[in-house]
Length: 132
Image (cartoon, rainbow, N blue to C red; front, top):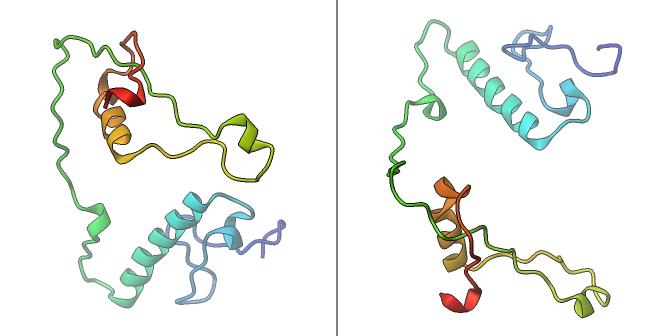
């Protein structure tokens, strides 16, 4: 146990002082983010696999090299679209309920927004929801 009341582990494998016992997330870090806890789970899974299969070469699917296919022409004309406003609950409804104020974009809106992300530093007009 550390001074902070968390479990002490090897910083790379997350192994505890007991053989075959691993710890991660809040038990090691104290209050932290879900992303950090998930990362610890992944690191511990790799370490446990290596512990259970010593000497064996391991290939974890999340570490596999992946190609990223993008089509971007920096010489192309800048997009005229600016960032879309996220739809919001109208004010009169906000005071009467505890619903989320910022609503989700439709699938079409999200695809249009994602399509302009590589040129988001350009643009002059907002595309209204009616123009779809």
